Image (cartoon, rainbow, N blue to C red; front, side, top):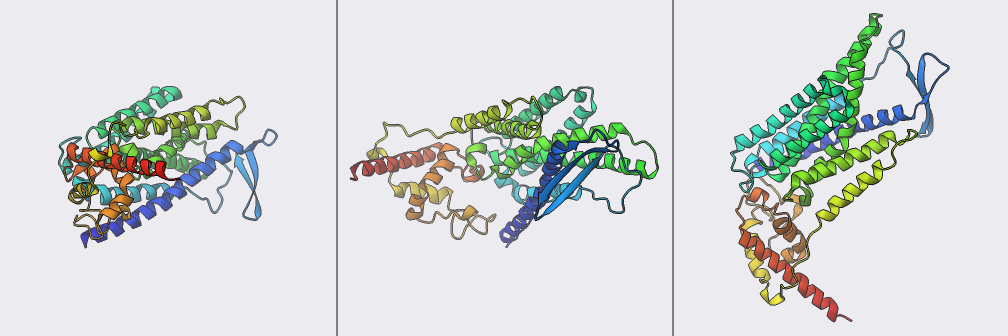
Length: 403
């Protein structure tokens, strides 16, 4: 019953996290696009820019004021709850999925011999330390230099990715880097952006000049959040792709894919400007392509022969010992009420159908069994590898014999 309740809690929280995240990031993307496409006004002193748009069968006309209005409107819309609920639902999901079963999802004895409490402490510390480092950096003299700030942020997350990948399972390392970025983003909203907007509103009510420094700082943090979005979105889906978090250099894979995402986001932000660098997008896409090529699976050695490969029955014994505890019609593992991802390996026919996937996660990425909880040995992985190579050779021979 506990696994069943946990599964439903995870589903509902993930759903809520996805919905609120779409609302938050969607608003961020929209206002960034709006700012970039305003028709700047020269004649009207009070209007900084305006924009005509058509959507949903109607026309819209938007204006941005150069300064605050003389009087506040009756209804003023704020954009903050999307950010708050995205983080709250995400943190709750982190607790349900990772901290509830930390020994299974966070601890990998092949990486570091940690207790569940130690792994959780490391995860929570990564969130707090990331915000403290980032906030102190932005408030320092170095924070006034954009290029230096960007390099130091990249250096921090490169270090964090490496450290977490050296202590936690690959999946847990990735998700905590994403949670650290998400914590920075929502803290920017809570501690900097919203207080700046409150100061602006209070200044209008009190008929005084608002503090310009708060507005400039809020704009800077909002821009940072905009660049953080694509790396965070990648990390949100990365746990479905063991080829990334399961790689021996998973921290570097994460760093390069994140840099590619930042570059793509930057191109969208500057493409409307005259004289912008046209190399940003192709370089970012080439970096993405380079990672894809570098992670490609290696072909089995030509020296392997069908006669040397184990029979499917031998491979099935390994699968039954290490995989079917979770991947069964009725899992024995207390953490799962149903087979993860619906993958059931109860018999040889199912194993043959899912041979490529089994080989990929047990041999290529070695991301399964999860955190190697059942202790699959190198010899057993080698058996799966030779069995799969034999199947591939058999299929190649049959293809050659067919007319």
